Structures are given as C-alpha cells and as structure tokens.
Amino acid sequence: MKNIINKVIPIAKGNKQQFKTLSQSSKATFITKQKQSLNQNLLNQYNFKKLDNSYVMFRFAKTVHNVPTMGDSISEGTILEYTKKVGDYVFQDETFAIIETDKVQVEIKAPDSGKLTQLFANEGDTVEVGKQLFELDTDAQAPEGGQQKQQESKKEESSKKEESKPQKQQQQPQKQQQQYQAPSSGQSQKSASQQTPSQQKGTPLPPQAPATQIQPPGTYVTREERREPMNRMRQKIAQRLKESQNDYALLTTFQECDMSAVMEIRNKYQKDFQKRHDVKLGFMSFFVKAATHALQKSPIINAVIDGKEIVYRDYVDISCAVATPNGLMVPVLRNCENQSFADIEKNLAYLAEKGKQGKISLEDMAGGTFTISNGGVFGSMMGTPILNPPQSAILGMHSIINRPVVRNDQIVARPMMYLALTYDHRLVDGREAVTFLKSIANEIEDPRRILLDL
Image 1 (tube, helix red, strand yellow):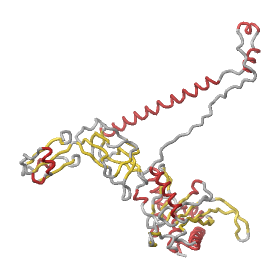
Image 2: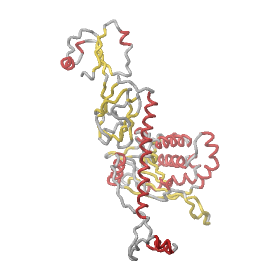
Image 3: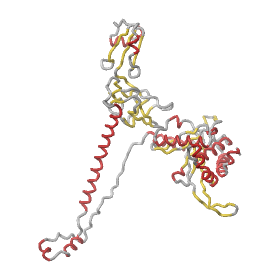
C-alpha cells in the first residue's frame, strides 16, 4: 500500500476549491463523503479508522489496468508485441502493445500518461478480457523533449540494429569464395608453360592433383526448413474453412460473362465519374449492384439457416474479400440496396485503405449476408470459392480474358470472365442457384437491366 497510495488528503467540508484544482484526467481517484461509507476491509487493513474528516480522497500514483474489451464475441487474445518495455514512459493514447485476436489485431493504447512499471504477461501469452495487463505510474515525470524525442531515440536504436546486420551477412560469402577459388590442375599447367625457363627454374611448380579428383563446387546449395507459430488469425481462418466444408453441403455452379458492356461504360464515363465523385469507377461496383438486385429477386440466397428455422433478410450486406498484410479479411458493405455506384466505390476505397494500414476493425467485418471474392485481381482464371459461414452463398469473380465466342453465327473475340457461385445446398436448390447466377451475368452483360429493374 505504501508504494500504491501516494498520499491521503483530508479535505474539509467548505474547502471545495482545493478539490477542484486536482487533476482528474491523470489520476485514479476515489472519493467518499462519509467515513462510514469506506470499505470496511480497507479501513481495517490500512488503519484509516481515526480519520474524522467528512471528505476524504485517496490519490493513487500507480494504477493497474486490465485487458480491454475487443469485441462482443472475443474473450481472449494473444500478445503479439510490446512496443514499450518496463521503465519506458508512455503518453496518453499512445500505442504500447498489440493484441492479436481471431479476427483482427487490436492496438492497446495508454489510458493516461505515465511510466510502465510492470507488465503482467509476456509476448506470445494468451490473455483474457478483464485480466490484469499492465501497471502505470502516473506521477512519473515525462522525458525531456516529450513524445517526439522519445520516438526519435527509438528510431535511432532500430536503425543501428539494422545497419549492423548486413556486415555480418556480407562476410560469409567472401569466406566461401576464398575457400573454393583454388586453381585447378589445368590452370596450374597452363601458367607454368607460359613462364620463361629461368622463371620455371626459380619457382617450383605446385603439385599436380590426380586427374580423377573432382573439384568441389564454388557455392553451397542449402536445404533448410523454417518453422514459425501460426498466428491466431490464420488459425481462425483454418478453423472456419474446415467448418465450412464439414458443416455445409457445398456445391459450386459456373457461368461465363461477357464484360464488353461494362468495359465500354467504364472507358466512356471514367473521367466524368472520377471528376464528379473523386473516385474511380471499378468493376466491383457493377457486381455489387448486380448481386444486390439478384438477391432481392432470389431472397433464399440472402437467407440463412438458424437451427430449424430459415431467417430471411430484407436488407443486403455484402462482404467483400480484401487482401491485407495480416491476411484475407472480409469487411462489409452495408445496405447495398440503398447505395449508388459512387457510394459503393467510395466505401470500397475506404475499406481497402484501412486494410492496407491494418486497421480493419471487428465492426467493419461483423454481419454480412453474401460475399463477393475477386480472385481475378491475382490472375485466377477459375476457382471454387469456399463459403463464408454462416452465409449461404459466395460469388467468385475471375480474370478477364479475350476468348473466342459465337455472336450472330460469327466467331469473335470478347473479354470474358468466369463466374462461380458456391452455395449451401441444404438451403438453396440447384435451380435457384443457377437462376441467381444467370441473373448476375445478364445484368453485367446489359447494365441497363439494373436501372430498369428487370
């Protein structure tokens, strides 16, 4: 208690001015108006029975903070990294730890400024929400120069470590070259024949190696294996994908789609669209609009099984798969039935930027009634996407390739894309799945159908 409670300040009834001057943001405070309302255990343990003042404040110099709530369905996480160590000073709202959950990486920020005096878990440990995580001394003095100077010193330390690494790596290849660059027997004989007789007499020739001797190669061929622990997100992805295969009756149907009309619209109106809405017109917005329209015509695709019931939704929330440095994530475009092409493109650009920065949150990925995955951006010609539980269907887009097709009894080249729809056959019949996928293809080939609600 001596190193936790800085001091006990009795405040008289009428002396409210002294209480107002105390900082509330940087100190945990406990105030009671009556001596009798103090916790009896606290009174007995620390002998505060003799306090006669009506107003008592306990000012704690060191405060213990717990693992914060990281989402409704998340009860624990793994400490991925501490950006600060014990003894470092952290400023309010400064990130000092990163906790990895099953879905996202959560930055833990300091609730107040102070010095880290204790960490209750190590990197790699799994911690539960509400458990003790760190202790903060709010009375510690900030370093001179503030937060900027502290960050600069950290950068200098990391740069020095990086500079020292390549020097060691460069020395090893030089040693290998020196070891295996010994002249062969043929080279020794040639150099000896080119010497003058006097030189040959003065310098003895090196011993000749047997003709059958095999010279070692100049470089080594390494065969190594490296093991690293699977992070929580990858574990969760593996678990969900396996559950999708085990618990759902998966079936995939395919359809080809002529992209000529969409590409013509993009080429014709791209500049005007970007000038008006300050965002580029991409292919994804066409597929989101087409899928939304098709889902409204086929509500069973937008439904989900819940126990022995089928839950129908009158809204369309489309999950769009986004590749991020932390793995594949599926943030959600909400209420797509009410969004325009510009709204969809702006929201997609916003989520893509958050994905690049690794800042996609649990709220961004919560929900979703249907998923669109675009493997075409990576060059995929055709694939079978795996269902995103608990949804009932997922649409896979693929690369656009000029292929020969028949138009008006003539063989012509057209920019074609294969579409794949994986669906839960327990809920969706084959006829409904094929009709749904054909509807998307028709609206992509003739986008006027979306405007006319056909």
